[in-house]
Image (cartoon, rainbow, N blue to C red):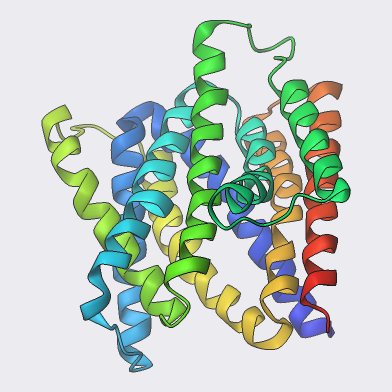
Length: 291
């Protein structure tokens, strides 16, 4: 990885790590659904401008795949992280997000018949223990059913991401990834819109929350994908996907710097265990992909 790619790689991890900070600021004011709705709408419009400028074919006839990806990869997980943003510190959500490869491994075994080797079993065990560590609240957070609901919302989101990985691998190998990212967010926004309208449109939003909503859409769901596509071209899918390991570190950092979150040893221990399990899975996939 040359210096230019390394800088883009770090910037991408920093932007996606900041998404948990922005959700933590926005969600308490507008709720989980409108946090997800605004992010998806702004993100879809940003990406649409990008793909139209580059004349990327949208392959509208594949709308069923876009719809399913919009549900699994956008509407449900973004709404769940919006719910979590009202309840638990941003650092917790960022750490739990790194469990996505563990879910993908489980669903791969269930849906694709992929073998769970001893190395993968160890990775899953590390991930489960890591989640248990994170699910123990710090001194600033009380162990209540509400806290556990926030942790559960994050796990539902990561399970959806893991399911999406398997679905895309099985059914959508021929789709343009830029078109998929754009239209799945558009479908996700359309799916959540009726629910948001039933709940009622927020009538008051503070300036920090407004800027957080714009940043979520433009940066975290829009521009971040531009960086990711370029890294995919330069480094390949497996190497580019390793950015997932660094997102929790930035999520914890931004939460500490801007929201003064204090996370105790259990969150950092859980972070090490979950990322350690993800790294083992990454190495396993890397060996599998190497001829």
